[in-house]
Amino acid sequence: MTTITAVRIHDVRFPTSLRLDGSDAMNKDADYSAAYVVLETDTPGLAGHGFTFTIGRGTDLVTEAVRQRAQPLLGRDAGELCGDLGAVYRELSGDSQLRWLGPEKGVVHLALAAVMNALWDLAARRAGKPLWRLLAEMSPEELVAATDFRYITDALTPDEALAMLREMEPTRAQRLQQLRELGGYPCYTTSAGWLGYDDDKLRRLLKEAVDSGYRHVKLKVGQDLADDVRRLRIAREVIGWDANLMIDANQVWDVPQAIDWVGELAEFRPLWIEEPTSPDDVLGHAAIRRAVAPIGVATGEHGMNRVLFKQLFQAGAIDYCQLDSARLAGVNEILAVYLMAKKFGVPVCPHAGGVGLCELVQHLSIFDFVAVSGSLDSRVTEYVDHLHEHFTDPCVVVDGHYVLPSAPGYSAQMHERSLVEFGYPDGGYWQTRVGGA
Image 1 (cartoon, rainbow, N blue to C red):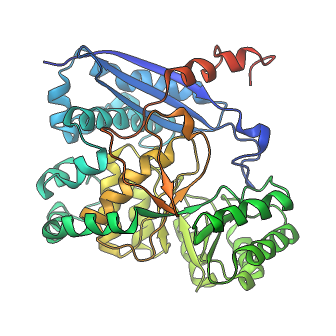
Image 2 (tube, rainbow, N blue to C red; image 1 turned 135 degrees about the vertical axis):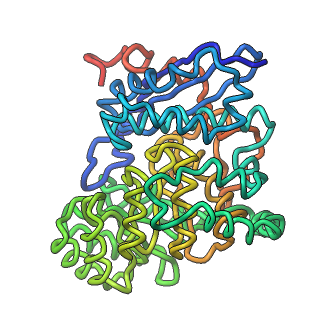
């Protein structure tokens, strides 16, 4: 028997604000950070690694919530836990006292994401498979058993999900081969478009993106209309008009303002406007979508739970679903969103603008194509070229495609040296800064 013997939790912060990496109209000084958890076992070399993404101050609040979320796992049989992750998810998410602090939103939900990500990583490592393969080889019945259907059966029932998964099961191998022939899963880059970059850097990074094989690039907008017009003009000069250009406002507009602003930028033919208003405003997104068509509306990185996504789908509010691997409560809740997106015909293009998120979402996108959606139409997953060197199994992107991961796990493990250097507030880097961050 393999037992969970300890839970190790780290507040890890990287000073990305110094170069304005990650800067946008809402978040001007992000220090990409993570509440990082390791589920240690008494089997040498076997542990589960997970995290949730933050941007600096407040990460300590999440790490304490992670500690409380993970406490019930201590002393438990890892085989039993990994053998029924649906049951474990329901147990942890059903903690009534912690639910009161959400429910299913905010710090306590982020903490559950970190713990469940670590458990799925542990399960994949025990099986000797990358997470995408573990999921893609699960039976439809096993996937449905792992999925959180609570509060969404008015949109999708377990029987409907089972039928969809069974329909796709016989052709999974064909789609996996298709990905291998393509060189991986298609992605887009946001790394050129941070709002704090000057025009020369914008031009240089856009050219590098095109030269690297990207056919989709995204720019941040929403701080100043004249600046947006200038920057989008530069983007079209560099990438041309046959490449796809996306824009992202990061929630800064009211609904009428979003409609007017996007109208002013329509000449640059953006594929989508991302997070045009409050992430919780379902009807606002629907109104914007009607007004700015044929420009698509994308949102989801701040989608707090599967219920919000259900409403976005039911209201016809979005053209692209951008679920986040560390805001939803791990794979169990993510499965629910993927399955609803399949039923409603909305492509899922996961958000990955943060430390470690690229490592996670590559697994999810591969699984989605192989076992759920069966389609690459209108699907492209975000990639940012930041901080991958801190992971033991970093994602690899070639010619605008995520190369299929081969190492066991969820690609979530950080190097110990990174934890020592960038752990907050006692890490080597932060000790050299007066007053820490």
